[in-house]
Image (tube, rainbow over all chains, first blue to last red; front, side):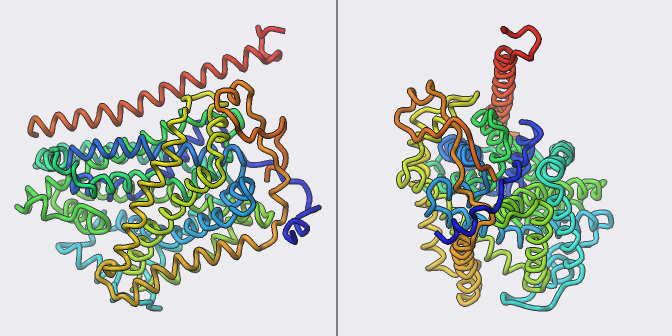
Length: 533
Length: 50
């Protein structure tokens, strides 16, 4: 109640920022979905989980969880016109903490995601001289990162610090320009550039000696894998983590769409574009790995084909082995940098938009203030000699507990708790696009929470029984559960902070009678929309 | 490449990139249809019913 009174009389909401059009939104959403995981995670996951046969659980996961949850995010953001905390508060006042939890998780991701982009940017420069020499692993661990044992060091690594500062300045600069002139314009430039660079890389990779062996390893199906539940879990995890769903990004992005926007067809484009890029990455990465195996005489299964080791150890080796390696290096690390940067912008926008609405500040004020705080924390934690184990642990807990937990709670809350799926289904169907039937409510309200809930519980059990990454228990528990605890505390704390302008003076737009009669009983709304923040 | 791997390469391309092309075409068709409807109902549009 006190929040309400504190907010009342604070003045009208300024007009909401908007994308210039559908294309701007689609490019920004693709930029968000296509990230580091598409390039360094998908190829390895597919190879380890059945090769060509992985296509089956992967497409099933895309169609039964990925795209349906993407549509849920779109309908929530577009109908309730706000960042995650505003949207969940408008859905039900008591649901606001879920929105802030998503913001807190996004905030945690930005802290370490920035440093990986900084590494990729540095390696793009290193590619010119192949600075890693004959031993890329020693170069990465000892020379570049100066990595220490797990812990919290205050010893700063100057070259990482410099790259991290530049990355933060670029990100804050783009964010400060706002949605249309900043995030959208950056994606209009970066996404086509990323596509051209990555396509050039793949064309070069598939023409290398040994590429066919790599592609054989990647595409040969192992049908027995389909009987393994772990393969299906891997497929749902890959789709879920890759699409940037359920932690506020797509809610925030869709809130900037004009009212008549097509939500469902747009979601299909974004979902398939993300998977198309992953497939392209698989072709490029495994062609390059096949080349490395042929040159060094080692088996493909004995190489590093996932994560930091793939990007910063295996690829430098490949670059050193090939003719015109520096060009290939610039294409690879340039692609990593651009893919990471476009995803980072979307995650930062979640945090920025939430604070703009809560504190009544402009995009520029939010970018500078929130960006400055995040940059200081990021630099303090991840430009030091303990960045590597810290990043690894925070990433695992934030994704496998934070993001998954958020998705499970969101689908159960919206579907079973508040029973708002009929209303959201009607909202999706009120616009042009693919018609969404009852099957969507079943997928979002039943299948998704069961599948994701199983992955969440499995992950928590593993965290509780095996120390993550064979690191000391004290370290992984303090850092991993500490981040989740801080996110919960921030969510509760921000919920109790007063709103500068009340988000409650809002009624969602009316739903056309033709849609209501098809969908059944829903919470309709009024003829006009009031109170957009 | 082996025939099996080549077959799955082609299948993956067909399903995933084919899905992308189909969804882009669907979005374009929706956008054109919607624009035509708006023009039909907007009196400011030349040729729209009054």
